[in-house]
Length: 403
Image (cartoon, rainbow, N blue to C red; front, side):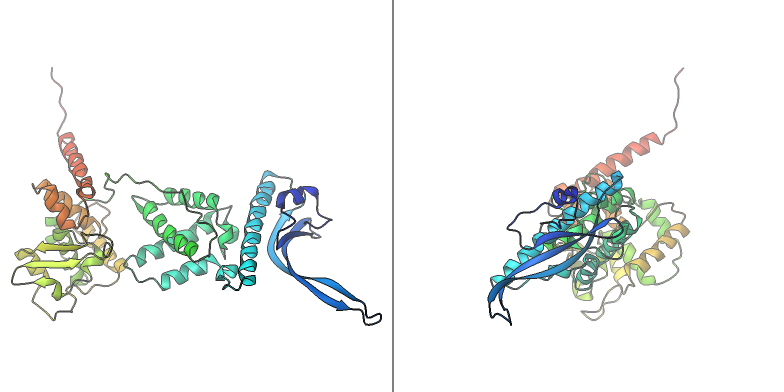
């Protein structure tokens, strides 16, 4: 299977069977490395000798360079590890080539995974994505690129990487990178979006096998990692002048008093408001289509109605907002101006709403319904946050010593 000039070490490394089609071949180079390529056997053709008229059968072969290289005589642990990883990639590419060849021979459409470059595939996936978490997908892509650039082992793929080069060891390294370079639930959120792309790619034959399978980032769902604004801090915000788009101020206060997510508050229209019955009705974008609790109704008091303002056309937006990034930038400046030393994002409003209404005596079933949770278990994490706040309040009292 391997070129006869190649060392037995390389022959053993790349292995293979006599029935493989294509086969992996190795060609020594002048710099001491070995170039790997695939050789397809495409049948035979009849050749006629023009002088004797004798007919002979000649095999038809087709060569495909893999642009993969091995060290013929590896001297360091790094070179040996490189050889091992590269040989595995070559075997995966050979297997993919065999599957494509078999599909072609049986008349089936050949999958487009052959020349797929994953970073380009990732970008195209984002460009065609229509759901509300596009921003998180873009963050996941940026972190993936950062990982490739920052990783000594995988930086060679910073300008392009093929699916066959993304295996379980690669994914484990990426997960480790995310956990070291993210705060709160950031690593979990980013990896979830990365897995979504990989799963889709696997379902569409870009990956032969999902490399993320069995690899997860576990999060304690009873721990709230976002900052919470207390009622006193909310009053401080209300009394602090806001500089910038006033819709950002109105919308954030509305989220603080209703628990709405960013993606939901920005899509609210006057058609969602029943002014006569003082009721807000909407469908949560995040859970629409896969939760029985996706539809939410929230009673509107005078404060909330004042934030909504005068009734407009049914499909006019209530809060005309810029991008999430621009809104959060203005929000952080407002929080800082109010003298609140907390890292506040828009989603903190949802957590703050839940903790504050529970602290004021609302029962957990009511809060769960207002938040649109599919089960009370999802709401119970806020009870843990209240217990923590109670402990902190007790611990804040001055200590004393009895004589």
